[in-house]
Every structure is written in structure tokens, then in C-alpha cells.
Image 1 (cartoon, rainbow, N blue to C red):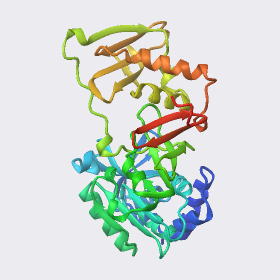
Image 2: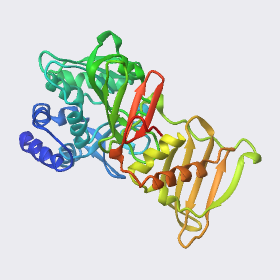
Image 3: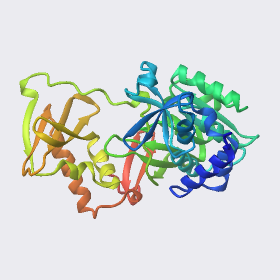
Image 4: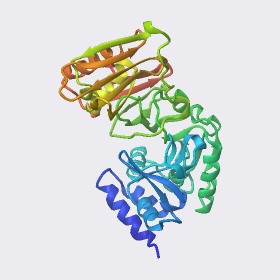
Amino acid sequence: MIDIAKRTEALIGEISVIVSCDARVRAAFRAIPRHEFIPPIGLACSGADARLIDRDADPAAWWDAVYSDTSIVTQLDDGVTDLATGSGDYTSSASAPSTVASLLHLLDVEPGHHVLEIGTGTGWTAALLLHLAGEHGSVTSLEVDPHVARQAAKNLSDVGANPLLLVQDGAAGCPQGAPYDRVHVACGIRQVPYAWIQQTRPGAIIVLPFCPGFGVGHELRLIVTPDGTAYGRFPGFADYMMMRSQRDPEDQPAQGPEDKHYLTTRIDPRTIAFAPAGAHLTIAALTGLTSEGAADRDEDGELYRLWVSDPADPHAWATVKWRPDTVEYDVYQVGARPLWDEVTDAFFRWVSWGSPGRDRFGMTVTPHGQRIWLDSPARHL
């Protein structure tokens, strides 16, 4: 016999140590059991490790994963690859409960609020939002993937929750339900769509995972002002799968010998890859570049490889390799843009500012775009 209440209390206790989890969010977690939204087969992810969980084959492991602070991947390769294979790009998931709790805490939903959710996923957060908004509130949830939306609709129906579910790209919002008091975003965002700000009332709060693609992702909490500008800061960590319309293109090979550049650097690529969040925000804001790093091994032995890419040009990218006992590190660059120099220049500019932490940065969003700033909106990067 599974004691859901006991498992839920243990989960709340676990995540309360990690993030702010106020009384109303805790009550929502108790009212909306997570297991109702988790499929029989999934990939339980902890850090870089992922393991297959199967409710029928190993129910104990399935229940343990569901009621732990673990994200559970529910779709691979936009549904093309069977989850049971355990291999593919993660394209939908049930987010880790601590991340869900933190974003809900930042969103501060009050009874009677009208909420727009971008990215329905399994439907669990939509149900939590409905509980927080109460009988006089409403939730409109947008999901781009029809299969994911159908399963979410079933999950929500099974627990008696009835948000308005629409299958569409969330980047355009949902003007017919405007104005909204809160916007909750459950996918990674590089460019904040101004439509979300247009569709909210003054004083509204928008909470989203800002994932510029360089280093880690960040929680972003924006408040909308009467003139249609939104201001916010980055309270903490949040890494989500990207909104489909904002995914990075695949890097393309050099178009010819003239596009191949073999260089060296004295700067250890791990200095950049493992830099604090404030450095990564600075690099992303100043260069617009993205990065990905991984430890590896080849015929020459141990290495760490850092990729740097221009999301606007798939023919502009570079790799930098660290190897033990090396003075000069190899840089391979495709295209004419000096990507590695731009990255390191931005990093050392951040150092020259005193290495400010993530909490000192913020963002302004207007009809003309977004700007990241340090300490105040007047000091944009």
C-alpha cells in the first residue's frame, strides 16, 4: 500500500531545504499528487545521470523517483524515439519538484488571478496553478505538441482539474484570454516574447527560465509597468528544455578550407565553462553566443572540449580542447568571426567589474527587445 500523504510530506521536506516553498505552494503539492501526472515509463534524471523507470517492471523504483526531487523525462526527440530506448534528445518532462516550487513561489499567485501558462507538459503545474488561483481564478495553458497536450488533458481530467488547454506555440501567448495577472513559463527562453507583456495588466508578474545558452539557465522574474515595460532580476538557477521556436540550429561543417582556422590559446577552456553564473550572463549578453562542454577521451587521452556557437549562423562555431599538462590549448574555429576571443574578452570584462554574482544582474524588456543590466537598468551591457 502506497502512503501518498507520507511520500508527499517527505518530498515537501526535501525541497524545502533547497528552495523557498511557502505554505500555499506546500498546500498545492498536497492537493495535487505528482504521481497522477507521471507516465508508467520515464527517464529519471539526477545531474548528468538518467535511468529508466518502469512502473510495471519495478514499481518501487518508479514510486521512489516520482516522490523525490527528480526531473522525469517523458518524451524523446519530439516523440519520434521510444522512451524505453533511453537514448535521444529530451523534449518534454516533468520538472524537478524543487524547480516547480521555486518558480511558483516567485510567481506569487493569489486567489482570483488569471494565469497564462506556456508549456503544459504533463499538466501537473497547470493543476497546481488552478489550486493556487482558486475557484474565482482561471488558468489558460498552451502546449505546442499535440500528443503531449492530449496526455496532459487526460491527466488533468483524471484529477478533476479543468484549465483551458490550447494546442499552439506559446510564443504568441493567448490574446483572447487577456489581460493576465500572472504568466508562468515552463520552457527555456532566450528571447522574451513581447506578446506576453502586452497580454498582462500593470503589476503582473512573469516568471520564466531564462536560458541564453551560455552556461547554466536562470530564473527570471519580471514585473510589468503601466507603460508596457517589464523589469526583473535573476533570483536563482533554472534550466529547462528550450521553447521549440527558440532551439539552437545544428552547427554546420566548414564550407571550404578558407573557413577552417587552427589557433591556440593560453586560457584554459574550463575557466570559461566552470565560471560562475554572473560570468555566463555577461558572456551571453555581450556576445549572443551559446556554449556546451563535455569531458571526453580520444586516442590521445583525457580531454575536456568546449563548443562555442553563434545561434544566428550555423556556419560560425569553435571548439577549444583542454588536455593535461598543456601550456597552449587547441582552438578550431569555423567561419571568420573570432568567437573564442569574444568569449574570453567578455569573461575578463566581467572580472574587471569585480566578478559580480547573478543577483546583481537584471533585465528590461520593451517592444524594441530585451537588455541585460548590472545593478540598475541604466547600466545595460
